[in-house]
Amino acid sequence: MFSNNEESHFARAKESLVELYDRLPVKMTSMITEPAIKWVKTILSFFSDLRVEALHLHFRSGYSNESLKILFIGSKDRLHFLRGLIGIDDFELCESAHLFLWEIKDYIKDREPEADAVVVNVNRILFGILFKPQGSDRYLRIPDCVQSVLKLPGSFEEVKKKFSESTLRKIRNVIKEEYTCKELHDESALKNFYHEMYVPHCRKRFGKLAVIASYPKARRLLRTGFIVAVQKENECMSGAICRIRGDAFIFELVGVENGRPHLLEKGALDALYYFCILSALEKNCGMINFGNSRPFLNDGLVRYKRKWGTGLIRNRKQQREIGIKCNGSSESGYHFFLDNYPVFLNEKGISALILSDEAKPVDMKYMRHIKKAYHCPGVERLVLLSPSGFDEEAEEHYGKGSEQGVELIRTAPGDWNVGEILNGNV
Figure 1: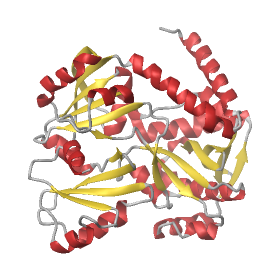
Figure 2 (figure 1 turned 90 degrees about the horizontal axis):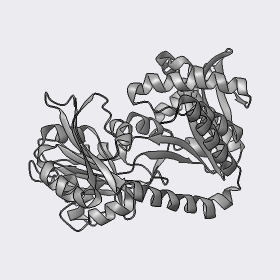
Figure 3 (figure 1 turned 30 degrees about the horizontal axis):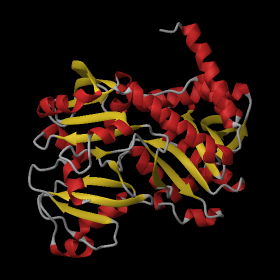
Figure 4 (figure 1 turned 180 degrees about the horizontal axis):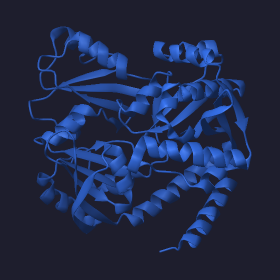
C-alpha cells in the first residue's frame, strides 16, 4: 500500500500526464490517441479480470421487509459503483469467494437461485466469452452511466424551443432575480470552488455514495478550462468547471455554495445551466454536455436535464461490461425495476425499459404519459413490459411495425427476467 505522501505524489504525476494529453489537438486525440488508450485499458482490464470476486450482498431495499440480495461478480473496488448504480448505500457483505474465469459460470449457476439479481461487471471481451447473447445466460446489458447532451442549433431563440415550460419559467425567474455570472481562471477561485462548492454539494447530494474528484484533478481541468461562477448581489450561489473539447462545451465538476439545498430552491442550478448555455453559444459550440447521471430514465438528474432539451448518450470510455440477470420470483427485485427504468445497450445504441404494474390493460392515456415523460433523443426505443397486456387502441398505435419508438411486450404474471424477455424479442 502507498503512504499518503506517496499517494499524493502519484496523483500529481498522473494528473500532470493527463494534462499533457489534454493539451494535444482534439483531432489527434479523437482519431489516434483515444482509440489507442481505450484498447490499452481494455487489454489491461482483461488480464486483471481473469480472477474476480464473487460477493453476496444484502441491501436494505426499502421495497419490502426483506433485503435486496445481489450476487456481484467483479472487483471489490467496484462496490462504490454498484452502490451508486442501485442507489442504496446500506448493505451487508454476507459471503465472498475468489473465482478464475473458467469458474464463473458454474458458480453463478449454483448460487443464483439464492439471489434477487446477479450483477456481472467484468471486461467486455470476457463478458462476450462467458455469456453468449443467443444462449440461456441472457443478461440485461446497461451502461455504467449516461450523459445528457443538448444540441445547439445556433441561436438561443432556437435552443429555447427545446425547453419545457417549467424550464422557461425558471429562466424568467433567473432574469427577474438579476443573477450574474463570470468566468474565472485563478488558483484562489479554484480553491473556493472546490472546498466551498463542489465537495459540500457532492456530499450533501450523494452522501456516502459521493465519488469526489481529487484537488489535483480539479486543478488540471481548470488549466484547460474555466470556472463559471454564478452570483446574486455578490453572493456566490453555484459554479462549474467547464472545458471546450472540439465543438463541445463540457460540464466537468459542478457545485453549489456549501451544498445548501435552499440555494437550489432559489434557482442556483437553473442559473448555472442558463449561463453556461449562453456561454456555449457565444463560443460557437455545437453542443453542451451536462455530464454523467445514473443510467435510469427516472433518475432525478436525468429528468432535470431532460427539461432543458437534452438527449442521452452512453459513456464511450466504459471498459467493463455490466450485465444484470433477475430472479423472476423475487419481490424485492421486481419492485426495484418497478421503481427504476434502466437504460440498456443494444446493437443500435441505447434503449430503455419500463415495467408497468397496471392492474388493467395499458391504455393510450398511460402510453402518452410514458412517452411524453421519458422518451428523449438518443433513446432508440422505449420497451414497456406489462403483465396485464395492452388495450386494442394501444396495440394498434404502438404495436409491431409502429415507428413510434415504443415496443410493447406482454409478460406472464411473475415472468419478468428482463434479460431473457428482451433478448427473446430483439
